[in-house]
Image (cartoon, rainbow, N blue to C red; front, side):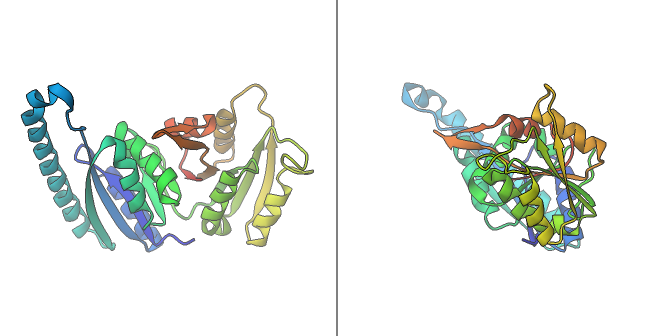
Length: 278
């Protein structure tokens, strides 16, 4: 996959930091930027209480829709001043359904990018992550504060455990991996055996990557009582990695997203830019 359309999500409460980040990535990759402005709407009042608050709820909705239109106009002005190809659209959705709306928009992009502002946006952050990972079928790039984002990383680290999600993450990032100077396939506490990670853990994945022209080495690391997330974070620092590629583990049940421990840790505090897929 080459990245020809990149999606980023903003809202009336956010500034232009993430827009600038996504614009720079599009300029670097020669990609189109799709900006989705999202306002999370309060659910309609129900029951006997509804009659008392109906007017206030309607006034709130009108204010929300006005804020959405104003933010879309501001984003359009920002994009008009840039040299990249871009478009802007808006979504006014109840919180419970916002992730699906974001995911549907993400299906028409190659990558969703969530920058520092988005990562600190609370409920909107959750909806962007859930939408991208559960509903778009495309990867998600998390870029934390203080990190340089690039779609031409020189040093990439892959969190590998032989599961489907990790395989999907590798497949989604092959264009980046093939052009990197160094790729480290990292296994934490690998388990040998045909039902686990093979007779030589990481060897099959490394062979697959090498056939795609990837310059790969395998690092097998002991956790020594630490969490897998902390081991990966420290190794990324030690090897000066520019990007971490990993599968996102979790499932959707009764509209509640449940992520695995490593995924949750990386979402809450990514130590470097993280490309996730599932």
